Length: 247
Image (cartoon, rainbow, N blue to C red):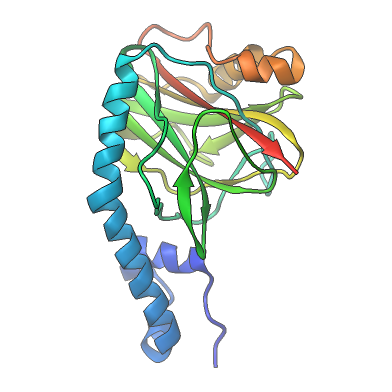
């Protein structure tokens, strides 16, 4: 009997069943079919009940003055920084509405971070919330208009990690949607700040990384206080969330 696939492999199957190699296994394994059915139900619950409330929170947050946020995480095969993009797409399943959705100047882009997943439902994180230092994270953005998106993180050492996309050029996003992939924290306690930058036309990745690194100058306190990215074009929407990694 073949080995049962991981949760990540099943999530990848849900995103593209026509090209998935799991069809034969799923046809023979009742346990995995039940797992897949559960994941489909959880994803549908997210789209029907959590996402609409998330959009309301985005709108409210964009109308308020932006608060300073915080963030940092683990490399899993990418050369730069602490947070690394996961190889497979992951579904977000949140048990409650997001408590704090952070938007940017003009409300051009908003960012939500979720922790958990797998056997445990993911939960939306508030800005500055403490999480276990080796947590897995997922991301969701809302773009008020079509734009080209980068998501990066920076830690207290000034190391920048490329989170989305994991390779290639910045893709176009519009509206609200979970981002494919995710990241795993590096297990080192301390702050890590996640930045979403969305512009049209796309910015070079090097410009976004340099702005994130400059905003976090000054070590841990620099990361906690460095919410604003400077030196970017006026049409670049930015949003940021800070997480505090704890043992």
